[in-house]
Length: 288
Image (cartoon, rainbow, N blue to C red; front, side):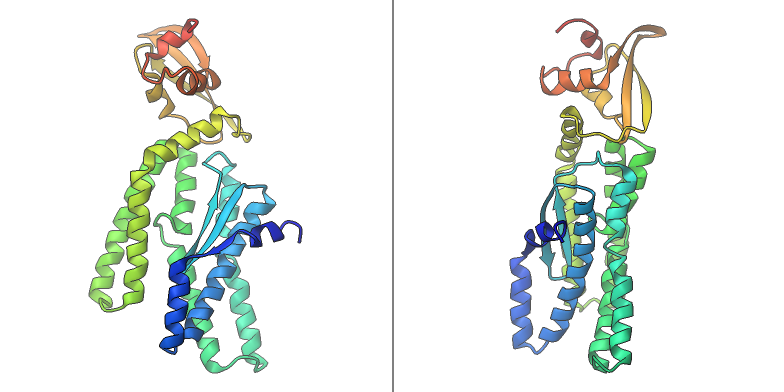
């Protein structure tokens, strides 16, 4: 309970959620919205409690009308398997929700209407979140797997592209199948805005990843990565090849001749402390 209580104190309800609940009262759809809200709450608490158990720095848990958002102060340097567990902990809540719903229905605790509504909304929230679109769970999980196989910056760019293509296909499907469904248009609109914001802030996301490493928060080092760089390459270009869960050794060369080696801590210090991001990497081999 000591681990769960701090999570509960960080729950925030988006103003739009309050507005829709109020509209639900006026339009006799309050019960449906309340059921959807309860499912979203359970989903997000699954993420948040798992993150709390791993010692993540949780900033807030915001509940939106059609989903939720767990905001943490972690920026890509947690162990990849840890991130996948936190991401999976949301969708896993739908299993016990389904079982509990069926149990309550069989003992006559809930009506046919509540039962069918809970089953429907439970699957809707689950399948939406499994889509390979940022910032949904499916999109974030795919990003974690990509960032395990390629540099962080490249993986982040790729997941935005994949998300954009997936979202475009979903948009076509919505126009063809159910163009008048305002609820789905709200979901698509939110995802378009979220993806645009992620693209707009992509350099900031990368900087936070690097700064977290600079200040020593990359504790799970699983491999040593050797990066070769010509002496005239700018420092910031080397940083673009940094990977999660890796310690980097930069080998500075002049064509085929090795001039020296730099630890990633030296390169990060040069970038963020000495402001040498746009200087040739070869200059770091000498006192600065």
